[in-house]
Image (tube, rainbow, N blue to C red; front, side, top):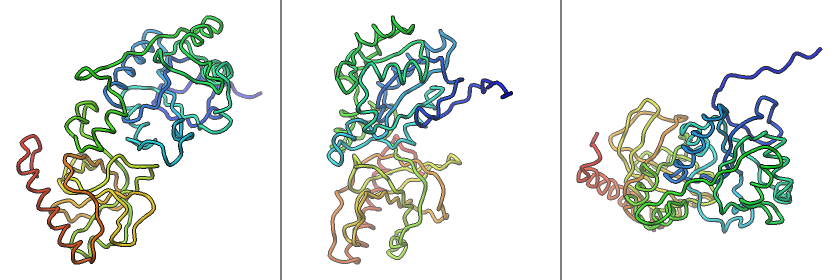
Length: 327
């Protein structure tokens, strides 16, 4: 006789795909969204979700899609992402969500009707008891999925539906689109106001071609693996390592046009007065000011001279910025 399944401890977890749901995952309070950037508006929704989950004494679950639906339909023309899936999952779990369920947005999911999505994902998959979504939420290939339909389904299947909170800053709704526009305009102070922290890209330092070291400007390279990056150019940054140490520097996000280029944007970080080998380490790179656009130089000597000029500009920025402590 097969032993009965036991309920695991309430650890925070990431679930990829409906096929990885187990019987103990049934019974939860859930929300659905892109959560790109995990900004202050998202954080308000997550606090609402967690409060309802605590009232029900059930896990709080955030449902996300990969790729994001607009990326599935728009491909390379989709807007730039604020964060990769791994960064998003980390942010959602850090905010207090118990589980993140990631559904692959493919042709099968795209072709689900609204009713089929409710039954397959929400009822049979998660056994939800309460759903928190915006009253403008739409879903299903037939476009029938809206707040009213969810309420009707809730009455039939035994779950409640509540409207998620909307957060405004300076009279405008906080949104990923608004943050993306601020970043592209180089307004890092405005973006930080909506994010609740400086804009951050994190990743693992990878081996590069050592060109920076040959030019006297060694860099830590992070592969972004994004459809597009919201940032392009050279920036004053700080890098935070897992040991808590913070180091100032300059960073380039681009395709390296002077040295044959790369197909996807690469983040190259040069830290001031730093010599430790950091290959394989995870770092958080926070962006504070744009110094210039990326450009192609006629020679490596010209590139070297510009890199040293960038470093001097970066050091001058940090020396003048009272809110950023120097090393």
